[in-house]
Image (cartoon, rainbow, N blue to C red):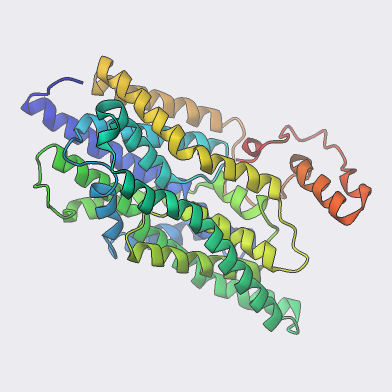
Length: 410
């Protein structure tokens, strides 16, 4: 994008920091569902109270650990060749992918969108030598494959144990007790989310500060960066990612409080462990895996595998798709300049937000029943397994404009 003089360099650094905080904001509302979807779905917490609690604990979690921030800043790409323009393009790629998946209600990984965006812009700028492939594989790709599997296993075993222990307790007593328990377990997930996800923007800002010679290469995350990222994440969380909350809470499994609490506790355990070791784990993958595991572990529960399949497909393409967007924006920025690139980001954001208002999802309708029509694949699969053709004879709903596909439910 050309050499920048001292004033332009300062402006560019400010632009990068602003964009990083904007990513943190999108990360907050995109990933609110990871912590609160099950509590909202089981009505353990009201939607607005849930997002307020999640926002507060996300902010607190951001101050607990900085191991993930160090991985993002120095473990995936060569910080020595990274420029402010590269960081800006990576962030724009991540934000655009986050917004696209949010508007269609797909709980994809904000973490992998960020990693993909930065890696894509580095590849476009410096080629393969700019990427630390061993770090990318060990710290991002391998955990991405293992995390949902571990979460499914842990949640399935925990759900089966809890169901067995509480099988003789009256249903109403179970519901009441586990709803209270869910407040604690959902709080743990929110705290864990802050220890992992808020660190990613801190790492990116630190990378930008190093690239802009604002801090030495061996610097740790400055306190003002920690506070800014915590506030941006908390504010984003409070806006409520209702579209993703709906998919996680209603689209995968019809949850009862016992499943909700075991899913949340399993998620928190896996996320805290990954934060301790500095893995920039996808909390979305963990939360989704835990919810699926709670369905697998509960006898008689129905899992909508067709919805899960569409989510898994989105997960597979997140890193390369965000990388492609990051590379594309690097090419645009190289020709048009960083200010024009930032303006393009604002325009794309406005268009996506306008599109989202065509079929709004908010705290009033986030818990509406999931449309049976939209999950025809699951009904067909169930009819084959149960040898019951009547299961696929679903009534058509002429009143609902929302047809098949993950995007129609936000």
